[in-house]
Image (tube, rainbow, N blue to C red; front, side):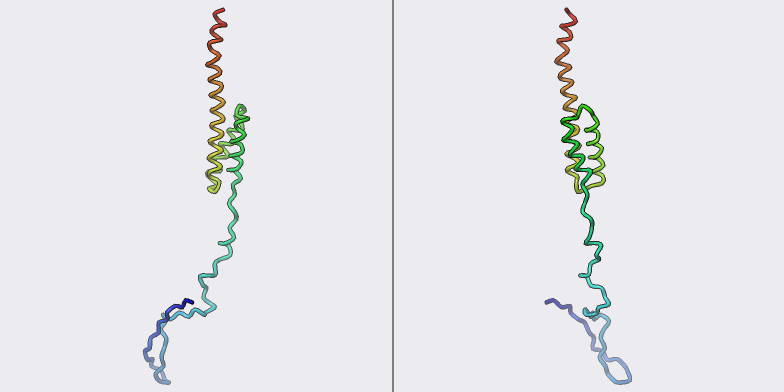
Length: 132
């Protein structure tokens, strides 16, 4: 049980009926229904919509799909674009967006690396065919 201390002054006031004690304006009456209380929070503050992570989840999905469709360059590009928009617009899906971007880049550069290694491995055979 908590109660706030009340401050009252016992100064006599000059009135026609004699000495009457008056209360100071510092006295707070907590039972006044006209004053708003701290416990009455606005309804709109407690009913905020849940955070959306649609772009971030799509970026992660396209990032995973990039390992299978990286040659088309459309899927990794879509993953990167959705990941960037997800980072900008959806702070709750930040990790999904980052992973989508990373997976799309790894898949794309992985295929480029495989093509380069294959081309370098094929060069000696081209030279042998030219010598014959």
